[in-house]
Image (cartoon, rainbow, N blue to C red):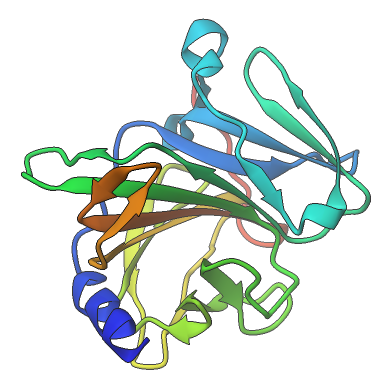
Amino acid sequence: MKNLIYSILISSTAIINLSAHDIWLEFDDKKDEVKLYFGEFEDKHLESGEKFSKIKEGILYPSELLKEVKRNDNNITYSLTKKDDVVVIRTAEPKKARDLEIIENKISYLKTGRVNTQSFVDFDIVPLNKDSNSFKILFKNEPIKKSKITVISPTGWEKTFMSSDKGEFTIHTPWIGKYLLKAEIHDDTKGEIDGKVYDRTVHSLSYMIEVNQGLPWEIKK
């Protein structure tokens, strides 16, 4: 276990791969639902139709909160028994890494909610206190030091923060609205899935939080 955590800590300093498109979760303001979206978060653009149809729904945790999953034209809606912090985990078949001669196993974690201070999935960011702007980044409940976390604000502003030796970091949220936190780590432990051998696992996290106090802003059209 110590060797695993050590290899993760070494590789967690790698630059986060930020693509033009993101996948994230959002709470519905009026219902006990979360919705999975695919698009350009900073530009408030959502993909739909054929482009969105390729997005897998994944598995929601904690599973006891899930009532129903429904696929729509531009989102996947997860109906819940109550509103609480939730994570959707999506996996893909191992495949060759871009620009590298290795096979990667990719796991993505989509999270929303800022209430629970305990982790319930392998790769997680949890608030130090309810609704806090201070967080801890963890892998299997072990803090990840010197890890980069990128934050995209509701205005499209973007800033990178670094976790401390305790895995803790504090972000700035000057504007009212939704913020997307993004992090990625590489676990260099080799493995096999359904007969397909891989060289490492890439864990990526998109974590949506909502801020209700701060400076108002408007989208320029």
